[in-house]
Length: 421
Ligand code: CTP
Image (cartoon, rainbow, N blue to C red; front, side):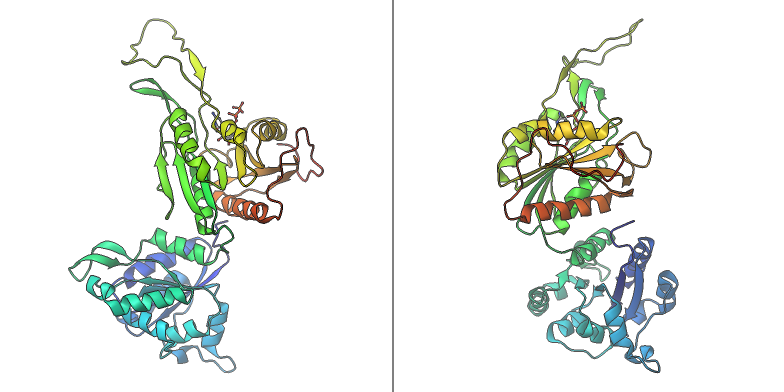
């Protein structure tokens, strides 16, 4: 189940051409299991019909404060209370000014004053309006008041101008909403994540690699960022876009990944290695394409560097080191050995023999094995949710007064809640 599942978003639209994009946002939220209650300003109702939004959200759309007044309840208060998050997208300069000054002259601004939920504001307007010092001062005030701003993008604007002012992309809006709902328990942490496969050349057109898609590592990087950390993501070749606000370092081979990780490792307070690093590479990659012969072909392989072991050897008491283990049999036993040998604080075990977990799928079924060797099985979850929970665990280990414990060699599980994969 996605991170936003079962949440209630009250989505306020104010009057701008970007209202049509809010319709897509409603769809994306509903698809993730979110209850969306739409509020339109009178201006917004000129740009998009309430019927469109009502059809997409499956709930009535409110415009007037008095639309919601029924016999015994104060509708706007009830709406404000029902929100896990209030999102205002698009937010015009006018609504931003009202939010900054506590003006409540319509339903949307009244709900904004009445709610105790976090508020996400996504401005969209003409570039000159956006740059106007009074608008910038109002936005600064919103930030200061603890509202979450999702900045507009630069590009071609419907008014014919070019510049900042375009409503943020759907991905940025969704990430902004998730961040507003996430406690900032990793604020101040510096998280280094590895992800994806590596590729080792056999000749100029062929390589050795594996089935890793990078999804788990990218989800970990996004979750760390969402919880307030600064994040660097070292990734092998994948088709994924870097999560917002995350610095991405693209590498190809195990050796390049090692160099990138060791260069950033002194900076990191938390290292999470999800990458499926090739264990072997061609000992003598051919300079030219290997031509087909008549018989079989043997390829001499040599071992690559074990990056995680190298980082583990540089163990620091003030740093937390998390590894992943991909196994197809005797998972817990192998993962415990890796935890010990690589000197980790935590290892996440994936059973990659299953079709709904591990490589190249959106879900994962993992076991967490602590420094003491204790194994804890999690049910089948979206990788995003695994990453989210993992971050909560990392944060609690980081905040434990004595810091992460030294792994105890040979320690056995005190308690086993799951069958060995
Ligand atoms: N790892 C690494 N460098 C390598 C191999 C693995 O940093 N050359 C890291 C992975 O990112 C992962 C952990 O070590 O966090 C375990 O990886 P895994 O592939 O499960 O195990 P290996 O150590 O490669 O052992 P084996 O292939 O025998 O299972």
